[in-house]
Image (cartoon, rainbow, N blue to C red):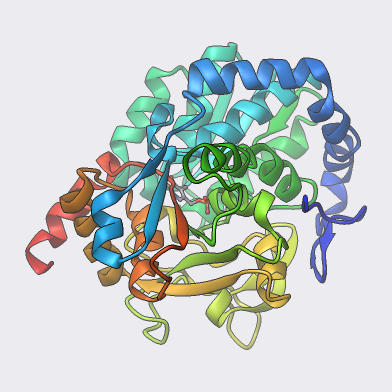
Length: 394
Ligand SMILES: *Cc1c(COP(=O)(O)O)cnc(C)c1O
């Protein structure tokens, strides 16, 4: 069962394209061309070639023996941490950059918060020799100097955003403004399954390579194509969408998304959007968002920058509402403990985001012979400062 939204971009009650008049032409152009381009033989050949030889796919499906013994079940790790630049993000960026080129676009624009999506975008733009502008809040630039350095070394222009709170939401506004003003030659490259239709479907389709590989790899290792559980962390929801994609609605696999509870779901410092959220519109899509009674978006908090988002992709809002997937909230502390556990048991330091998925193992009780796949979305190198800061509390 492959999951795509309806013609208007809706997954049940969620999704759509809630955009200002000025963006209509740009979004319609993309909407009108993405499906046929992605399905074309030429695109698929180019995409698969780069996924294989540049990104490093297929990523291994690693049987984590020590972790399995610890939890008394069969645990596999889908090693997205071994992708070039250290996370699943590159799958999507490679695909969208190739799409942009086939649409005749000559300039890529993106926004970034912590800098991971900006670095992935700058990387692929260097490879494809596409000029690239990344908008980033001034505050984020100060906090993430290494990523600013990386982007500049890769040849991207990093535009400092000094408006508003000088963080991701303001960078998004500036990137969209730029897109509106340069509609003909600019492609706006979104980093997760969020934003107006067709972005959530586009990004989920490009990331679905993750579950396609899992299917083949499980067949080889377990002599079955379908796991009993798939667990992934959700920020905007792209690695989870990719890991769930081919298993949605199969009647066998239990899909679990791990969202960031921050200091606790009721602490006021959280990013547990599905647990706490209500319906509303954010960044061009109708979905679940954290908001107050007046519809003001609440600020999200998580120890992990990649999960620090007050919304969720519309696909996940729908999977949650329809009971096709379950979402559980994981606190900062639980994630840090899970990261240390994986590091000591398997010799793999995970990204803090991925550690949220690992912490789900403490909350479920699979049988001994059941097969779990955990999407290890990224590696922990970028999080060493945080791990060091909290190390004595673990
Ligand atoms: C960005 C990021 C995430 C969160 O993004 P999704 O779109 O929800 O996948 C998760 N893990 C890592 C390692 C990331 O870099």
